[in-house]
Length: 152
Length: 182
Image 1: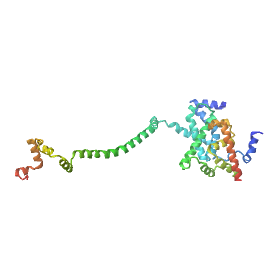
Image 2 (image 1 turned 30 degrees about the vertical axis):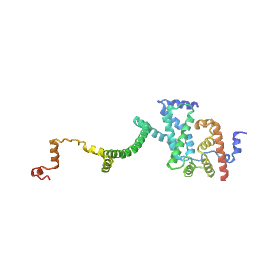
Image 3 (image 1 turned 90 degrees about the vertical axis):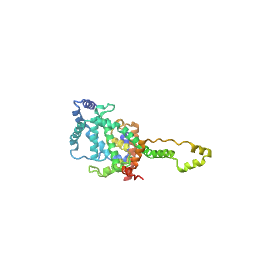
Image 4 (image 1 turned 120 degrees about the vertical axis):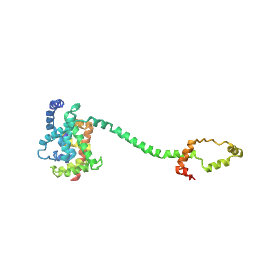
């Protein structure tokens, strides 16, 4: 039994049908096809490959990745930078400032001898020159007041 | 590869004779490739696009063709891949799931003004469209073009045994569909 007979026996419905393609094409389609294809190929030949574009195409994925990392970095870095410095500044300021309450507590916590020793310590001498004094006065008081003696 | 195709390929690879050789290639293979494509994409406009894309790709790649297969199977391979690429891009454009093209292609078939068959042939085409993509291509190549399995194997990069099994399963499904539809 040949292969064709085997096929016919196994696939009776299929065997009844002609194995022809049931489609047609527009009139003169194959006659015109070559000409239309040539138009397209001429356009292809005109397109000179651009090396720059090619480089960009190759670098594109790497650039995209770098841009993503930069974005993530900025999303994390800027909030941290915005919040951290004032927090640091606040801490520094708070370290340098001693509140009245803290001062009072410190004094109250001292024993008598330490307290009197503190009192008897010579004050730090602050030397103010005549120029410094004049500068201070001229900043606070106008010439008119000085001449007229109306600075108080 | 037959002698004519060998000579044709040699002319294609020679820049001085490429243009004329390419015209000969197109006139020799345009119809066969068209009908192969048409049975995959089920629509004349799409088949025309794919046929042009196929020959453009051949034009671009002819210098790099390593002659590991025959010219004929190489052309068929390009045409098959271009057909499947078009179907996939149409699916994406119409938001159709990638693993389901039968309904989409059925619409192409039923709305095709160039369908020339009768009711039974419409049923046959419907049955073929129900097949998985690769099985459909195998069935078309064997049933309509009576292609040898060895040639099909080069085109689809599948073993002869697998192709025989695929065709047998496809024919069985089509047969059952035709019997049930009566």
